[in-house]
Image (cartoon, rainbow, N blue to C red; front, side, top):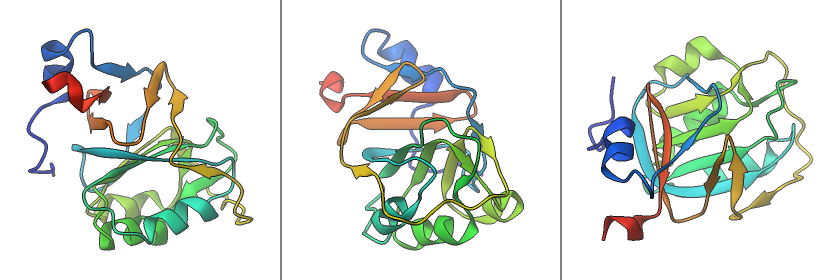
Length: 165
């Protein structure tokens, strides 16, 4: 399935804006029911703790994409079936995680985009450590709240909306 609101593939976006569009060069994989998604960026930085991520997803997503810098940890999952369903129910277009997910089979049935490094059966801590609404960088790309992120099977691209003119 693809998200009908995605008008431009990541490859076309990078071709159209070769100097302005930046790509995330991590080996991210698609896990959600939507394999192509895009939206304005909201951010969370958390390490092996998903309480702040979950709290943010209780807010109206309004078609945004939550970019999560989990520090690249593969120890535990920052997102599972219940949190993904929370994102879908609250109108988030998707999530891009520099970290892992779990409940992989169930995530494929959830109508939300999910891109992550991999999977882990361990659950994250829930102490609430982390930051939100701050620029986060991973894979050679910087994700700033309010900028655009596009994700599909070719990769992840970031664009400042001012570049569109």
